[in-house]
Image (cartoon, rainbow, N blue to C red):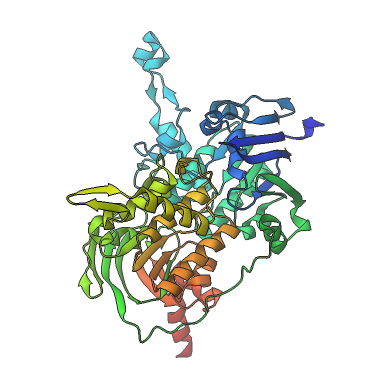
Length: 536
């Protein structure tokens, strides 16, 4: 019976520090089948795949129980090398790239192509040279498969996270013995156009007989690409259904156990009489892949304004430039006073906070506790959680812990305790810690970049509700960058579309899909010109 399946995972159980995160999961996957795993944040999707791929954190936390069959035979997968040898590839939610290497070197890592020379013929293979030309050609073919128009000899360091995701995918596509590829939230940082390109690539892979496991929180993508859909909730296997037998609403209810209102648009609010709190003039930002060339925008007190657009057009560069993560030029004024560029600490001291799209490298200290991560910004910048004894200061551990408890409860962060390291949390819970850290800064102006990246539909609503609550109840002005247009339209008062590093237009959430599409593709002005010519 097992012969018809490329993969069977039987009664898989896993505990983290006494917390049962997988409770007897069974999975059956056929060659050429696309199975999507869905479930709320912390449901166990990534943990199940980390077991399949033999990731180190599984070994270091006591292993797992259960059995894995691959091609009908019991498989012992204790390290990624074992999985790769069997023909299993994985595109991880957190990037597994070496920043000091080029794109080609990352794609061919541990599979380098060697060119024999005089010394190698005499002294052995170890003295062979890298065949960089052939490696580059292979890398180029993989990049072209997913439509990534970037030089294969570019260094990975400094690439936007969206581009890094495509490099991860290209690496797996370059392997020749693939029988199964796992995609863990591959479209979390991609725009709609890029996501569609990736989904088409997945379909092509499956049509060639390679099985695909797809982890996603975007249910429209799930319904488009899946053959079967497996729903997990709190570490339990709730149901596996064929795509034809379900719909988005039914999946959402199975995932979270309650109905989801996914189609709302932000209510209309008028800020014409409000003061301009932030003024951006001719901003340029040198962020690789997300360069800002000449961006200007006024933001009024109390509004939530969105920054949208396609990947590589500069929307992510705006906040990263203002916060000093990447070199910037231009003028930015806050309350009418100049905001210093290229000086992150000085900006943060002005009651400004930032949630980066890159939680792993910018937003968090992975080997520190949840409590420490939430408090560190407010402690260093504002001196919160400190007791003063004359000339001496001491950390107020009680106040810091009480704040952590409150944030864990408010954001529904799934953890053992506030002392757990954030490295041990799922990606979605790590993102919640980033938001809790920003809110602990008690900002007057909050920049959030891809705030729901890698977060499931239920947890996503928790995050968006907190942002709206912060805006409504405490008057915090919010500038939110997102690759998901539906997300922007659900919470923003205005949405600024960034194209070619400049402000293309500002739309209301009620603008039509066609208008948004034209603006994001840069075709809006062309359409307007053609319309005017027809009227003449």
